[in-house]
Length: 315
Image (cartoon, rainbow, N blue to C red; front, side):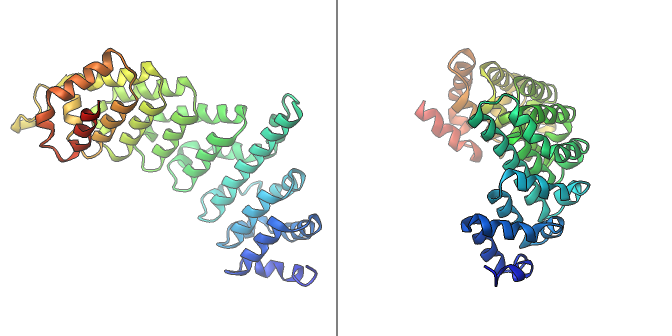
């Protein structure tokens, strides 16, 4: 170890050497980790922005104890956005949120000390604050959206609630954004009933058919069906069963249900498949299946409806 420590700074960002350093963090003694921690002091930001150095920092975050991490993370203060918007640094920010949040929750579970997790999680509050001050921009950023997803997955309840509140202010703008839609999908999975109600309202008011035909928004509609409650799922089915006129001069689709227009679309057909799988037994489910079965012969002519026809055969 004495021979390696002087060379650690060079090894940390070496294409091969970084793996050696990671293994030392993973399997080294407490003494070794103490020596390794010393090489990080004053270098956290620089390493985090490097291709191989960021991997070493992530392994250090997983391996060092809470108190050591608290001191090291202070080096990111004022540089949170710099890291988040960097192709390497964003991975470190994701790992910071995950590790510190999990350690906080585990400590409270272990000691049964009420409020301990909140107290411990305050050590990353500066990260949370910088993200929440730039929510809309970061949700629509290829790396920023990942950081927000980790916050929804791991943050303690008060931080998660603050994040959901900020995101709720821009639900509509994010729904069909190429990156923002992933944040909204996480909101549907990890959020509150009120968040799902808000998104249901937006989907209904902004045309279920139109949104289901869009590449990104269709994924959001699917997730709402998957994670929504029975009432929310049934509300979407009722929108599917509405009769609309569509098609311009060709008159294609005039007097058709939204459902039959969805099954022939490259994206919307997946929404229908999910509905068949998750909508609870009841009046809406019955009418959904009846509408599809009544038009089964017609559905066989549509490329994207073949999976739906197969599902009908299994019902």
